Length: 414
Image (cartoon, rainbow, N blue to C red; front, side):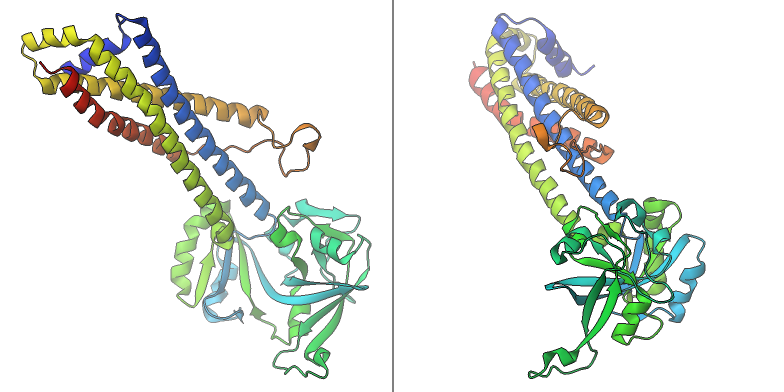
């Protein structure tokens, strides 16, 4: 066994001449452990929120989305896109076409994104899980086209969840010039009916700005061809993991004219903000960990004073100052290591209890139920645990290195 490590371990667990030194050493370990636990829990909560939001978007977003690298629309009948329909990895293939529109109901109006989709959209996304009302999912029939609005958009327009309520839709006429004397001449007016339902994803991006309808209606009102789309949306067999594996191969096959977007790329802004928040929280908690390591320095300085007679004995036996410094460096590193292991264990325990029992709720008193989930979501990822472990060791080792060199020169000099 390494001699400095052996002595450091004995010093850490043996009884000191002053009981206060044992107490301070214990508090040093606790300080590092609690800072480590805070890192584990905070990063896991951010992971939980990311998974929760990704689950919400699953009701609307496909596993993979193919868009044009340049421009808003492209031809879905292009030869390079034809194999997508028959690929064994693709469970559902659907086309969509989006355009900004003005919606008018009675005397109220709102701008919205009109998203036209194929009839098989229900097989692509879990839209049925977010539908509310007494009607049924319908985009068109032999006589009419229908619009399913986001719940906040419907509220702004004052539309009740009643079947066959007429909704006016205005879209710009392609290629038409605006006549200042008659601006409405540059707009095309159509009618959509309500199937008696709305969707609610608890995300303002969709609930306040999106209306679903048939893709044939959007093509007709915009005078587009039968194969014009703004995106091809795919549901992949095997879910997100299989989609992530297929994405680079599909991008290579389609080339630079198209963009293949996974779930995270489709909501890049949302997840980028969450990643930045997670990084900032990690940095702040690392500073708190550094402050906790200052207690380790105080504990080691008292230990050096307490063990002056022992160090003199080691000198008489042939030990030099470098070896003695290494003993106290190992002492500080042991405190950091024990604190890291204990903190990670406590953090994992708290995360498990939060997952199982929801110890910390989002609401207080009568506020439960107004959030998407009642308790803070938690998801532990092994990459975060490894990051926290090495962060604690690095901060602990660096925090004691210079102080121990300085104190050993001052307090252990002849």
